[in-house]
Image (cartoon, rainbow, N blue to C red):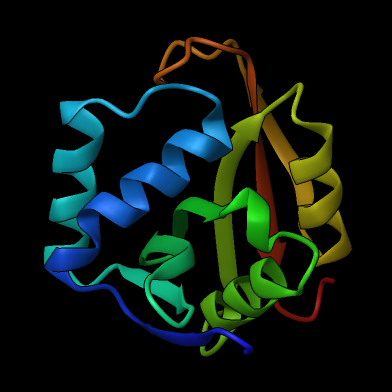
Length: 141
Protein backbone atom coordinates (compact mmCIF):
# COMPACT_ATOMS: atom_id res chain seq x y z
CA UNK A 1 0.00 0.00 0.00
CA UNK A 2 1.22 3.48 -0.83
CA UNK A 3 0.85 5.63 2.28
CA UNK A 4 -1.57 8.50 1.91
CA UNK A 5 -0.77 12.00 3.11
CA UNK A 6 -3.08 13.37 5.81
CA UNK A 7 -2.97 15.94 8.61
CA UNK A 8 -1.70 14.54 11.89
CA UNK A 9 -4.18 13.84 14.67
CA UNK A 10 -3.58 14.17 18.41
CA UNK A 11 -3.77 10.37 18.65
CA UNK A 12 -0.72 10.15 16.32
CA UNK A 13 1.62 11.73 18.89
CA UNK A 14 2.99 8.42 20.20
CA UNK A 15 3.57 7.04 16.70
CA UNK A 16 5.32 10.23 15.58
CA UNK A 17 7.48 10.28 18.71
CA UNK A 18 8.57 6.71 17.92
CA UNK A 19 9.44 7.67 14.32
CA UNK A 20 11.36 10.73 15.61
CA UNK A 21 13.25 8.61 18.13
CA UNK A 22 14.17 6.00 15.50
CA UNK A 23 15.26 8.71 13.07
CA UNK A 24 17.50 10.53 15.52
CA UNK A 25 18.82 7.49 17.30
CA UNK A 26 17.91 9.21 20.56
CA UNK A 27 15.19 8.49 23.07
CA UNK A 28 12.23 10.81 22.57
CA UNK A 29 11.53 12.65 25.79
CA UNK A 30 8.59 14.49 27.27
CA UNK A 31 9.69 17.78 25.67
CA UNK A 32 9.68 16.16 22.21
CA UNK A 33 6.18 14.77 22.74
CA UNK A 34 4.96 18.15 23.95
CA UNK A 35 6.49 19.87 20.91
CA UNK A 36 4.87 17.31 18.59
CA UNK A 37 1.48 17.82 20.28
CA UNK A 38 1.81 21.59 19.90
CA UNK A 39 2.74 21.32 16.22
CA UNK A 40 -0.17 18.92 15.61
CA UNK A 41 -2.55 21.29 17.40
CA UNK A 42 -1.32 24.13 15.15
CA UNK A 43 -2.00 22.03 12.05
CA UNK A 44 1.69 22.05 11.15
CA UNK A 45 2.19 18.28 10.76
CA UNK A 46 1.38 16.16 7.73
CA UNK A 47 1.70 12.39 7.99
CA UNK A 48 2.27 9.59 5.52
CA UNK A 49 -0.28 7.06 6.80
CA UNK A 50 0.15 3.32 6.39
CA UNK A 51 -2.58 0.76 7.10
CA UNK A 52 -2.37 1.10 10.88
CA UNK A 53 -0.34 4.18 11.70
CA UNK A 54 1.86 6.92 10.29
CA UNK A 55 5.13 5.76 8.72
CA UNK A 56 6.51 9.26 8.23
CA UNK A 57 5.80 12.90 8.91
CA UNK A 58 6.79 16.45 8.08
CA UNK A 59 6.33 19.42 10.42
CA UNK A 60 6.30 22.86 8.81
CA UNK A 61 5.37 26.33 10.01
CA UNK A 62 5.30 28.96 7.30
CA UNK A 63 8.49 28.64 5.28
CA UNK A 64 10.34 26.58 7.90
CA UNK A 65 10.50 22.80 7.93
CA UNK A 66 10.99 21.72 11.54
CA UNK A 67 11.18 17.98 10.98
CA UNK A 68 11.01 15.35 8.27
CA UNK A 69 11.28 11.75 9.41
CA UNK A 70 10.39 8.42 7.84
CA UNK A 71 10.31 5.16 9.78
CA UNK A 72 13.39 3.04 8.99
CA UNK A 73 11.14 0.19 7.79
CA UNK A 74 9.47 2.53 5.26
CA UNK A 75 12.56 4.24 3.83
CA UNK A 76 13.43 3.97 0.16
CA UNK A 77 9.80 3.98 -0.97
CA UNK A 78 9.49 7.66 -1.96
CA UNK A 79 7.69 8.73 1.23
CA UNK A 80 10.19 11.47 2.09
CA UNK A 81 9.97 12.76 -1.47
CA UNK A 82 6.16 12.92 -1.31
CA UNK A 83 6.32 14.79 2.00
CA UNK A 84 8.89 17.33 0.77
CA UNK A 85 6.97 17.93 -2.46
CA UNK A 86 3.80 18.45 -0.44
CA UNK A 87 5.65 21.02 1.69
CA UNK A 88 6.76 22.89 -1.46
CA UNK A 89 3.22 23.09 -2.83
CA UNK A 90 2.10 26.73 -2.88
CA UNK A 91 5.36 28.01 -1.41
CA UNK A 92 8.13 30.05 -2.98
CA UNK A 93 10.77 29.25 -0.35
CA UNK A 94 11.54 26.71 2.37
CA UNK A 95 14.29 26.61 4.98
CA UNK A 96 15.42 23.86 7.32
CA UNK A 97 18.31 22.84 9.54
CA UNK A 98 19.97 19.43 9.54
CA UNK A 99 23.09 18.05 11.20
CA UNK A 100 26.29 18.83 9.31
CA UNK A 101 27.31 15.18 9.70
CA UNK A 102 24.03 13.81 8.34
CA UNK A 103 25.26 13.26 4.80
CA UNK A 104 22.20 11.20 3.84
CA UNK A 105 19.80 14.01 4.74
CA UNK A 106 21.99 16.60 3.04
CA UNK A 107 22.06 14.55 -0.18
CA UNK A 108 18.30 14.00 0.01
CA UNK A 109 17.59 17.72 0.35
CA UNK A 110 20.10 18.62 -2.38
CA UNK A 111 18.35 16.16 -4.75
CA UNK A 112 15.17 18.09 -4.06
CA UNK A 113 16.63 21.50 -4.90
CA UNK A 114 17.86 22.67 -1.48
CA UNK A 115 21.23 24.39 -1.21
CA UNK A 116 23.46 25.18 1.77
CA UNK A 117 22.69 28.67 3.03
CA UNK A 118 24.41 28.75 6.43
CA UNK A 119 26.12 26.88 9.23
CA UNK A 120 25.89 26.86 13.01
CA UNK A 121 27.87 25.35 15.85
CA UNK A 122 24.67 23.68 17.04
CA UNK A 123 23.99 25.73 20.16
CA UNK A 124 20.30 26.04 19.19
CA UNK A 125 19.56 22.36 18.52
CA UNK A 126 18.66 19.55 20.92
CA UNK A 127 21.78 17.52 20.24
CA UNK A 128 24.25 20.42 20.44
CA UNK A 129 25.79 19.18 17.17
CA UNK A 130 26.98 21.45 14.35
CA UNK A 131 24.23 21.94 11.80
CA UNK A 132 23.68 23.33 8.35
CA UNK A 133 20.86 25.51 7.07
CA UNK A 134 19.45 24.47 3.71
CA UNK A 135 17.14 26.55 1.55
CA UNK A 136 14.90 25.83 -1.39
CA UNK A 137 13.65 28.65 -3.63
CA UNK A 138 11.08 28.06 -6.36
CA UNK A 139 12.60 28.43 -9.83
CA UNK A 140 16.11 28.57 -8.36
CA UNK A 141 16.29 24.78 -8.14
